[in-house]
Image 1 (cartoon, one colour):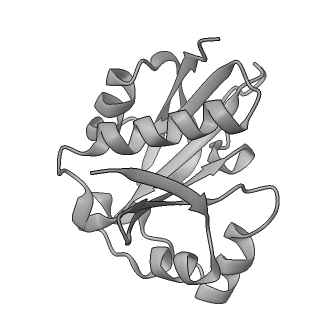
Image 2 (image 1 turned 180 degrees about the vertical axis):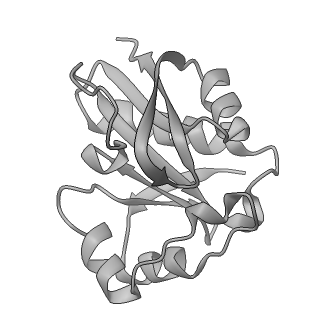
Length: 162
């Protein structure tokens, strides 16, 4: 498997919107109207990229404030990363390859010395994958309303070697 990243297209976003996760991950279903999702994800400040394995769209990621969760402490300067994986590819054991590709892209594209992810505390798979990629927990926080199926989130960071 070789994961490549490319800027997201209209067709890519429409594919992401159609993905449906089974419980308990159904909280990650994108519920926006497809046209609204295209406008949002292709916005210049979202930095949405598509993860591709051969010709198959296997995920997407965003860089910047889109990946922040309301209520978290984001005062430290870092590049925030969000990652969505195609439902058929979740739980496949390939998460480390998706994360590695996203991290390499971030290191080669952005000048931040610190990478950061915010993950729902109950998403043990994601916490394990990002931790195994060298990210360390720096804080936990609660939101005032449920987001992505959770009220508790974990912030993890990783320094960029260089």
